[in-house]
Image 1 (tube, rainbow, N blue to C red):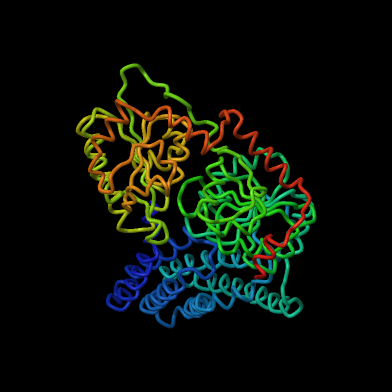
Image 2 (cartoon, rainbow, N blue to C red):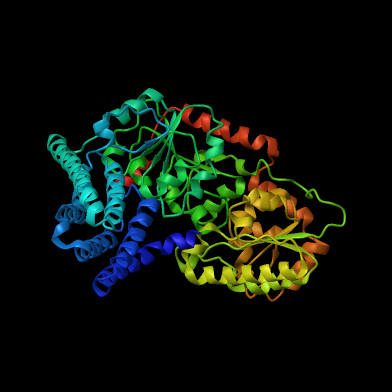
Length: 568
């Protein structure tokens, strides 16, 4: 479904062009063009109903198709409809200018008690965007009417269009006057609501598209802290995904000028889950404790990035997280670290999983994504078919779970799809209850998959670090060919059975995983080094305690703190 939604703009553009072609080529059959136009406007309205400027080209072309079809369908006799249609077309073409004029600092919020006047609620870009979406659909549908019916509906549509355009014009004029009064407008009603809440801390979130998982993995544990807090989201495309997953107050804050003023005096700490560039816009404010959590603990380069130097506190899972930075020359003072284990593992089964005697072993294979650049591409999907074929040749059940970002690389998505097809064919042939696709990636959590498996095969990723908490055997891949340097670069692998770069030794590794398991004792030692000696029932209380302790600290910035680094 997500892949379909990603390709949706291309289909909408094609349909809009087809509508114009149909309007010109089939003048005697205007219903063809109108049906295509209704599909274009309806699809946009359903999927991005509050986006004023989205798909402007497709909307423009489809509107032209409707006007041509309406002219072919009635000529000047339909002048009220044609005049209103031209207004709709101008509305679409001028959407960017309208959006800029309406951008007077009104902030979008969720789960926050903000008192808005009717004028304010209906004068924001999302609100006007919904008006435009509805108007375009009505425009295309109304074009079907002619004769006696059109004599009734055309003036009604013209009146509705005039009212919508007039309201938008009033909102644009008000926005223009507002910007004349204030060079950096601030939404006072939202500021009042945030101040009334008296949050102790905020979570700042920015990042790439489809990165919502980086924050959502932490939300259940922040909710258990018990004190009020606010989530500040910087990118519009991340807003809906987070809003659907939490009851916490959320404010969308695109502008840095607003970020500088929105936090009340009650806020003492700011938390971050990645190294997004926009983080620096809040970190420069040195009257808060800035805390980096990251979104998983692994030996990947991002988990010991020098960017972490600018935070006041760095939460790590265990001593391995501290040593990882120092081993790579990132000299973060020890007082900045807090060892919080991994609260996400509180439901993870430690030791042998619960299963019926005589049940088949279950193998979990979790290839990671390609990374943003080739030097951090640790994905084993190119070797994945060989790995999966060897696993399926054993009398086992397979769980195949890819990283959420796999779809961002078309070539690797093809590899993943081929593996899924292979697993599906084996399930159909043998009746074995393998899990793949949505069953393993969206309908089940990573914890669900770990709890259902006896052994795992992982790439260099946070999944391997999480798996080791279970204490069960696991293997790690080496697609980049580190070979002898692997253990120096990724010490977690001391507890794993290592695959060759081409996975040529997969049979030997499977024997270790499923039969021999010669590293059981070493695995227990490495487990404590990476995740600490914390029982599952203590993981969440430990995190809550450290969060509370952080925003209870007095804020004393040193010359090596965030402000000094950012000023350099």
